[in-house]
Image 1 (tube, each protein chain N blue to C red):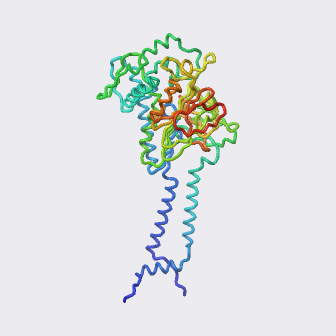
Image 2: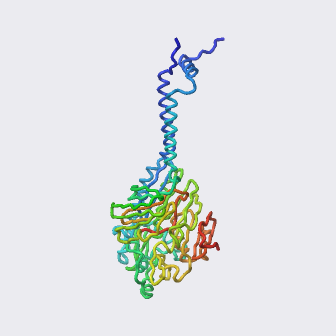
Image 3: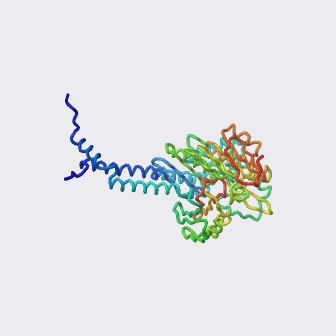
Length: 142
Length: 342
């Protein structure tokens, strides 16, 4: 009975895997790249849980991201003039040149998902970081 | 001499190509399928949408177009909107309207009946009389309207002063002074329409001015404390549902030590003056638009009327000055000590 002989290419491949060892140097490099990129992607997705911070947006564009733990005065000159103050881990709109001044009269914010909105100037200030996904109620912007 | 261990050339090329493809798949599966709108302005308030699933980024562009389309039709602040044209029209003069205005008019009529006129999109003349129009509101007032002017204005604040020709898609007023405003359901309607755009995706969280809807996983939603808006009243777990809150703290001014808020009853006065002591109502159910309208209706009609909500498929958290009440099936956790559960 004629014995089965592997195809020449298959034989070479089998010999290669038999001799090469568990990992090739390039395989290690590729694996490291995958692990680093994966860790970076996961970090990007879960960064909101890292800690409390405030973000300031102008018409969807992120202008500033600051820690709530560091007091600061942030001046925004975009469509109009706004001054945002971070003090004692709370954020308030100190000044705005909008007509209705609703944002200036709004309470200070400190909880994840809370916002101060200056609709006439297109500015939104929001607290991020924490367990809350969204907040219902709050001041209506006008 | 030891033979060099080499991979056949074609297999080597295939191996590297395969590795690159796998790497890209891993990266995209982790980060490429989640998209967030960022913080944007629409309807005079904020909107934020987070979507997970293939094609999420493309949906965000559709959402932006949709919101602009709705706002262009129904905003009282845009002179060329359908609503502005209707409000400026004379009695008997038909105004042709777009699909969003037509739908919202029909729904407003339904909700007007379902809430025993507590949700009334024709109350806009009274809202203007009390200086609560979003276009002119400043949060400051020296006086309130007279009882006579309130009674006179109330006479033409009824949905019966409008008719809708479905075939022509035209709305006609029957009183020159009558005006419409869909501010009480437009944001909820927009949330529902965005949900439709998100169908087929893994997860979505939509928030337009506190009108929220979600699907594809549990979300933790905070409810603003009505007397300390810098803190939370409590949190609820929301899954495949919508929530909307109305409160007397959202747009108000104080005259002579009395708080006057933007929710007007069918007697022509802000809630809390003549009707009941509800200061916040959060309604949970399938449609954000209906939640939006019912949250207003509960504050106007009171807790006894709200007992009907579970029969409609909706639940509510009612907050008064010193207590709160849950009607329906809600996973709510209070985070405050100022109010007892009744």
